[in-house]
Image (cartoon, rainbow, N blue to C red; front, side):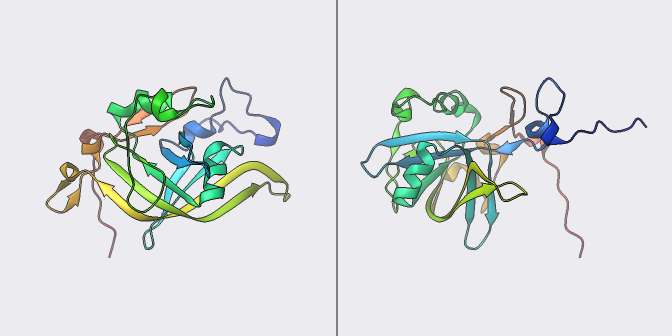
Length: 203
């Protein structure tokens, strides 16, 4: 077996494209809707996103830079996570613009009111979590140097699910056609029933 390709990230990877986000992949997409204190809507996807706790349900995303999503959440303490699906992939991508405009309008998406928080939901998304901020953390290097990287953690206080995705009391993951972020400049993956396998935890 050949020796593994080894590199120290501080010295660069020496490849055509950074392999890190292709290795830790595919990753769920944090499609985050917020409103500013002045009521301006914002919608943006984040590829550093995941669920971190069951009860209470805590989700989080990390932003490279103090972007509008983070600024809005810091001000209002609220956000909504919207499930990105294959039918919504192009709209999700269109909402990733850095331009100062309403991403709902730019992406041609209808907004739906939330029940417990001010930010709207993506009406066409089959799942949405209404969240309140629990922690906003500035990430650091091993030396303790602050990065312009911000981890936002929030508690889901209200969850919307399209009933068509629930069969016999079980949420069917693949039926929603969720998409996930891979590596490279634009790699995505879709979850389908063909990828399903099951294992029980050992007793």
